[in-house]
Image (cartoon, rainbow, N blue to C red):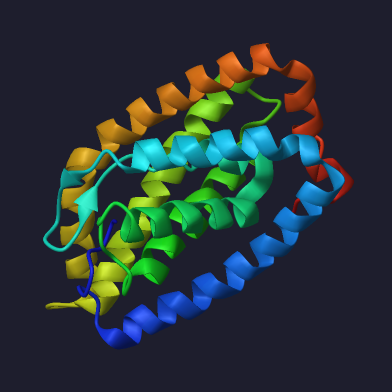
Length: 222
């Protein structure tokens, strides 16, 4: 978990739960549409969730009350968009909290918001902006990198809002600077790994990839 169990004040834990619940609820509706209209998307959904689970389990100690790790949210957002990726992130984080004792039930909403919503949303914007302008593999790499960085910028904002000492900007700068030490190299490595996985999967099942990517064009995803 980015933010450990019990670290956030109750009021902020509730705020992030409410916001995340709204987005995840919307994501569940989109996911149901995709599964209904494109059941062949299930293998790629499973791969996207498994990729996120494995990468986000590789944790390093970081700012007090939090940890640093790859997020794995780039692949899911490219294939299925940010709303469905929020559902995948919720499943991954809930499994880690309940089964693997990573903790973070009280901060689950905050962690979903950073890794499952804001990170994927920024990654999605990067993907949309660069698709067709660069080689697709480099677009995937950059999408994953920016989704990771956006996740930790959001975590820095969340921590600064909860602990604005002596001020929000000062606290945000402190948290962001410490996260940058680990996340800048981690995100670059994550981007390269995501690009390699993308190349492998797109060559393995090109017809399935194309169909899933076209879901968005039919309005069944976002």
